Amino acid sequence: MAFYIQKYGGTSVGSTERIKNVARRVAKFHSQGHQIIVVVSAMSGETNRLISLANEVQANPDPRELDVMISTGEQVSIALLSMALMELNIKAKSYTGAQVSILTDSAHTKARILNIDEDKIRKDLQDGYVLVVAGFQGADKTGSITTLGRGGSDTTGVALAAALKADECQIYTDVDGIYTTDPRIVPEARRLKTVTFEEMLEMASLGSKILQLRAVEFAGKYKVKLRVLSSFEDEGEGTLITYEENKDMEQPVISGIAFNRDEAKITVSGVPDHPGIAYQILGPVADANVDVDMIIQNVGHDGLTDFSFTVHRRDFSGTMEILKNKIQPHVGARDVIGGDRIAKVSVVGVGMRSHAGIASKMFRVLAEEGINIQMIATSEIKVSVVVDEKYMELAVRVLHKAFDLEQVVQN
Ligand code: ASP
Ligand code: MG
Image 1 (cartoon, rainbow, N blue to C red):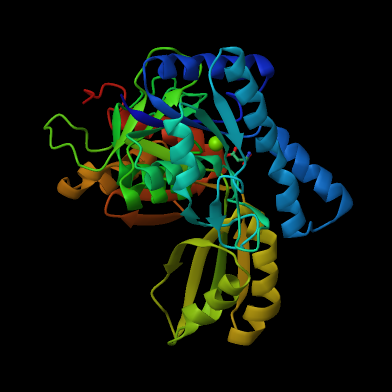
Image 2: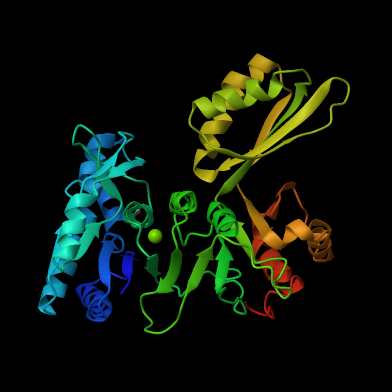
């Protein structure tokens, strides 16, 4: 007998028919004697619908009230799923995040989980219940409802698995695992049987939207056994996120190609090249709560240098304004230019640690296609380039082929 946390995303509970399907799947595991806590998202589209309602009333919705509202999507799902389970003669009970005592900080719309009260949950499990817990939400110490950021139900699942020491946290979604790249762009993309936690972390932060980044970080911190599976297929083992590197000789150097269209590039040119300049430019950007991704500072010439970085596309115009109005006059930069028609393409793989030449191979392959590289960033297990958005898909395709990801011998 095992103890599973099973998380079902919005598409998997997108209609009452689908909810009944999830109930049948949960019932199957339950009848095999496993203990199960189910975490569900709101029905697909519901959270977006709620957010736009709020926007109709308040231009910048009050975060506390927004949380009160957007947490209701999940509340509908948990009740419906519990009912569906009862129809299959299974003892089921639903809980909102606050009811099950998921304590968070008070950072509305992006709260962090601080503690989960186990007692109630343990008792229900012992009494033979399937628990159905609302994802994406908790309550702070004053009892105000909080939410965990878009995609936050993944984090609820992982946090429950960590707190209760579940055997596995299974993330059921509309794809059957983590792929070498998005199959919509490269039809030959293959499902990975395993992916290391570090690779998953890179892929999630590089824009693969399958798992919320915070959920992956959480899983890593507590070494939660995490598996991504399809909720639409009965068979299939999905992709397991592992914490050990596979030392197999056949293990490919590169595990996947990630990409992200959500970025924009900004260059501050002709800045005086003296100590403190990076701070003077990026300090005010950070103060405006804008996350900066890649940063490049050029070698100085004649006492001047250029400084480039990328931000999320939605922060582009706000950041340009800060730079033009506050920073440029202050530091005496020549110009601030930028563009939001860029994309980032990355090759990721822990095998890079023991193999040289990955970056140069990547650059050669892109050059052969005439794709210009605008920026480069590397870490121990990834090489990222910024290219014109219109070449993104081509870049992903040629790299996928060049790194033999179609024919990889799977571990
Ligand atoms: N319903 C929330 C969202 O759409 C949380 C989730 O689906 O994980 O972001
Ligand atoms: Mg999701």
